[in-house]
Length: 357
Ligand code: ACO
Image (cartoon, rainbow, N blue to C red; front, side, top):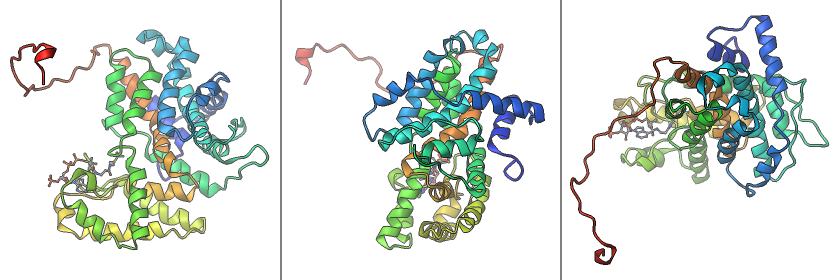
């Protein structure tokens, strides 16, 4: 898929189970274009957020609010919501991109740019991000291709924290928009979707200190969670993360094509080599994950750091959607209820407030 496909086609595959034929692809594209603008009343929601609000907080809140604008798609009655699944999924995929771009414009105090019907998915997103009312952003094929690759590589990934959250919420028969919104909240944590931002912060700190990464590697080996080498390790991949390999190679190609020499890429490569030779990382099977290089590509495309996790959320939306549907359409489905082993105190008597210290 990374070699031959693009994000929209991959989204269709993940949602419908097969690659689209030409007619299906056209229809899907038409639906995405149709649903790209947001309801004008949504502008007021954006206005309610203070300047500098994090785009992930805005994205999660506004995704949830979509159910209010499309009540017929968010009835919380599973069979009815499933009957309108095609429309709801197109709305989610299309509008997550529009809301993301608007949240960026809001965070910068910039005027909103409306989507253009004529532009493909990625180009339209960059238009909404970077055009000005008086000047259109010009997207090169290299930039559109790199963004497609980034989104495609993030489109789904089994039971990660945010996808499991979507399934958990969906299992209560909550509608798709609400379930995706919960997933986006889970994604915002630095150990999950926030890792790409943390990687860039780490690389920038190494650059600013003029260090070669030795200090960060030494600190990461202390075992403290707060000093981890960001972009390293994975809960599932214990040999390598195949996405990291693809995105690492793409980084080289994209930056070369765009004529960018980013010192952070050099630092990342040095750090990777140093860690891969270090027994601490080798013995624990800690390899670069997809986030290690993805921030460098984002930066080359002009995406600001506070939008990195939001970009991940746009890419992951098809995965959330198909996981929600899987849970919602399971005829034997039950509400999720993880069990726990209680290890706290046993019997405790009620202490009146006057006796509490
Ligand atoms: N740097 C230093 N040490 C690490 C790192 C790291 N990045 N990751 C794991 N370790 C160590 C742990 O301290 C532990 O050491 P110990 O055995 O001496 O106690 C050992 O490696 C195993 O760690 P776990 O926490 O069991 O690994 P787990 O599989 O649960 O965690 C995780 C995976 C959260 C991704 C972790 O590797 C991490 O925090 N990485 C940095 C954050 C990151 O890059 N997240 C992005 C994940 S990919 C994604 O969400 C798209």
